Image (cartoon, rainbow, N blue to C red):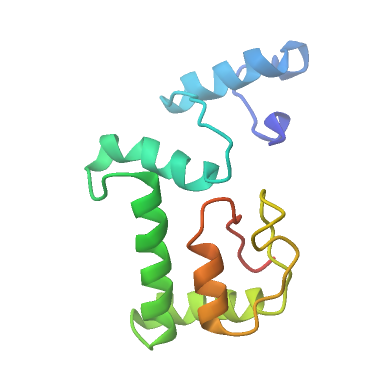
Amino acid sequence: MDVFSEPLDSGVVGGLSEDAYLEAICHKYGVQLCSVPSYGACFFDSIYALLPTVGKAVKSSKELRLSCVDFMRQCCEGQHGAVGERIVDDVNDALKRRLVSSCSTRTNNKVPRTLEDYFAAVSMVSTWVEGAT
């Protein structure tokens, strides 16, 4: 994250350390910076860490990952309207790319051949979440 890309009203950004700048941004927006484990599920751990502020829809970050994959499957089945169509575009784009995983023995650097290959791979902890770029 480039912390210096977010302007502060105070005009003192240049004199702040990165930590001080992050603290100022958090204060400005009323948010709190928190760390999550980095064992291959940091995206879902980050989202799951926010759930207590909006409700408990799932019981774990692993369950959240599987719910997201199920939602993507539904989109590929023609559900969820325009949002579903946009997600299908991302999934189809992902089928042309090598998967990125923090575990070299699983899916890292492999191109999924089918939708089911893709969904099986992104269901596993350690496979990174990626959309169209």
